[in-house]
Length: 230
Image (tube, rainbow, N blue to C red; front, top):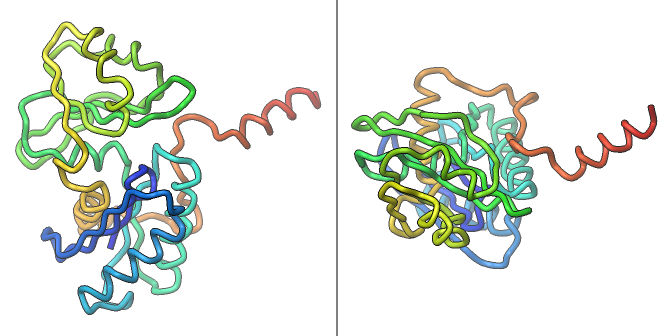
């Protein structure tokens, strides 16, 4: 079982090996905590499975909503600890890129990072294999265009805000995939987590943390307080 709480459209999925058997995607004003727990319950009910039947858990670890990431990781760690099953963390951007079918273009998943910035990454697909072409980053959307020198396909909530800006700033072809036209992030996390579990790439439940890329507000405030105290 895997779930995504990093994006506005949260999702929960269960796979059997590399086959998706159930997927719940919900976009609403309900908090991730309430949405996640009810979706987990529905997914188990539909498949007639219990938590003990699952072979492990996968969860988005960022970037994305700070609150959503903390909720998702807390639930995932709790379930893994209670059941003794392995836990795998998956990059939100990697899962978004994985959800696209094979395309001969650069793949750029984009999430709104607020403050006039976006979270973005660059990936290439070689058949079923996904390769990261550049480290994940947070930056103003106009600056993102400076890294793109070939045809690119965008996916993610960020394109709704900055599509026109991307088109203006790019000299190469650009394509945009609307959400709902590709596999849910939760489903992709489940498929990626299955491969990682097979390869033994497991997380230490006590030390796994969200990958924010940008410091959280709490960390920023703590840092300022530390600077003033010197």
